[in-house]
Length: 302
Image 1 (cartoon, helix red, strand yellow):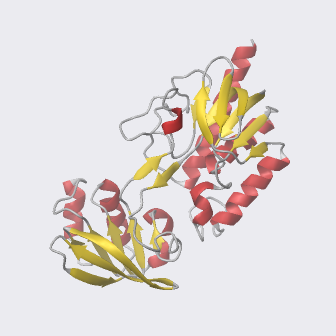
Image 2 (cartoon, helix red, strand yellow):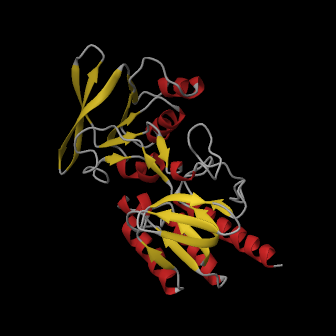
């Protein structure tokens, strides 16, 4: 039995492992795919303190190696269930493991457009984070897809950087705040492309244009260097819904101390309810969740 099992080896989970091992707790990290989470696909990180320029892969590898060097154990198995109690049991596709505390740091997936070559062009023109990658498109032409607050805020942010910003939305009205939409209408370099959807990505190694089809079937080609997809995210919490409380969008409900309503179960990173989902907030969550888990274990030993 482990002191702490961490589900997810993204920045939040691996940071939690570092903090837990530094407190001399036995730690098992379970990861369904590869360490690093979504950050591993980011070609250049510019907004993390100290590391002004580092690839997502290098960042993730350094954190992984640091956690390993401290003695954290990693198993690449997908967790499919969590059984609560004084001793928690995490069930994977290969077996099951027991721990006194569990940190769920499974993150969230970007909802994708589902067009051909979308995955291949991530980091080569396609992005799901304007604040992460917008600076790479200064004085260039970009498009934002979506109609919610995230899409509108992304477009407003990019309007200060890019030469041209197209806002593509499948409906004729936005779901986001009208005040933000009004600000976008005042920008000379912003153009709305409504009642339309992206149907094709055009690239020569990197993205060069997007094909847009409107509701009448008319096809238009927009020359862009960057496409920012903001059509929602899918938190990876469903396998644990019987233990932790989720909001209507599927995010885990927890206070800023990362404690859930289930004793000894914590959440960290992009899978929890929060305002800002960035690399720095993920690592912060990992530190907080591990610290709270250590407190929980100490209280249980008394």
